[in-house]
Amino acid sequence: MTRHSLDANGIRPLELDGLWGIVFSPLLHASWEHLMANTVPLLVLGFLMTLAGLSRFVWATAIVWILGGLGTWLIGDVGSSCGPTDHIGASGLIFGWLAFLLVFGIFVRRVSNIVIGLVVMFAYGGVLLGAMPVLGLCGGVSWQAHLCGAIAGVVAAYWLSAPERKARSKRTAGTASPRRKT
Image 1 (cartoon, rainbow, N blue to C red):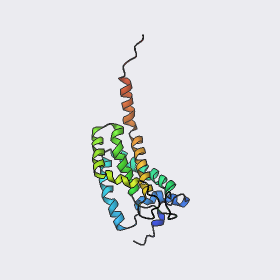
Image 2: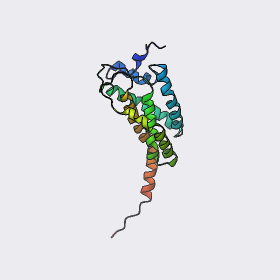
Image 3: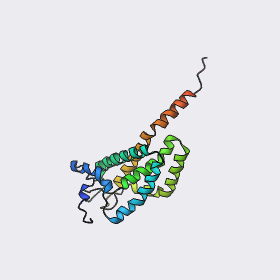
Image 4: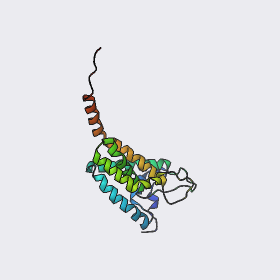
């Protein structure tokens, strides 16, 4: 179980076989410590994600999982002097959910979602530094997965806030003052 035999099923950047890693990567971890480090944020942020609605939780998870994984596949070797790397772990999903929760309230302009975003920002805001590029570092943390997951989370929040944004647009268009003829 700890022989890392499944690590090759992670995301291998720019290799066609590495695309399968998009499916498996969030389910694979390098060690028990890695799994445990991801478990608490997954549970907390996953619960908070469901507050946006079960359907949105499922769609946001799918968007972050796929887009974040695809982004990692595209840029996963950027800045690495170690040669080919397999990216594994759920932290891309965690960063995606984190980014989603931070911006979703702004997109929908709903106080409850903004409050959730602020709570998440205060509790996990420092974690966002993990999405910053670290060039030349071998092994360990995949800043590429963190960054791509966060970007995918913002994209998911934007796409999934479309009904509220469209309704708001219709409301504001309907309440605009009529033009006067002069």
